[in-house]
Amino acid sequence: RFWRAAQQAKISTRIPKRFYDNILEENDKIAVMLAHIDYWLQNSRHNGKKSRFGYASHVIASAEKPLPEWENWQKECRIGKQEKEVIKEILANGTSQLFEELAQF
Image (cartoon, rainbow, N blue to C red; front, side, top):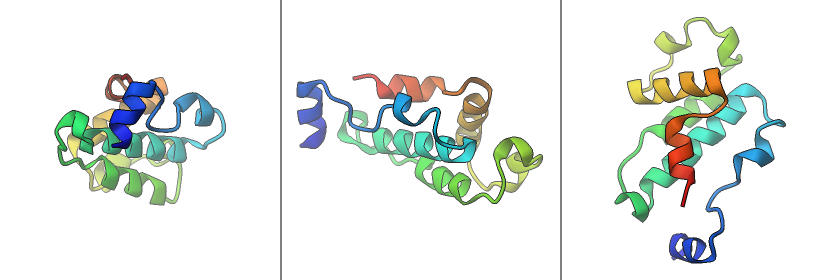
């Protein structure tokens, strides 16, 4: 219900990136973005697809050091290839194509 109401009212279903982009540390920002992707992939707009982005969000949020300082994060994090690719894209660009596509109505 919320998803349909938000679409009709043309309001965001998640906190817009501009509100947290400059205040969160790298891992927290990535974790929030992955959690948003997980939410969007699981809602009815995307046929309720199962997503591993929620787990990836938890792994990154639990990391003891920032990803840019953690040399072997790609080997040591037990997350999927797609999730790692999105994380690398966020680290390089501050966002990812998947995030931006899903953030659109």
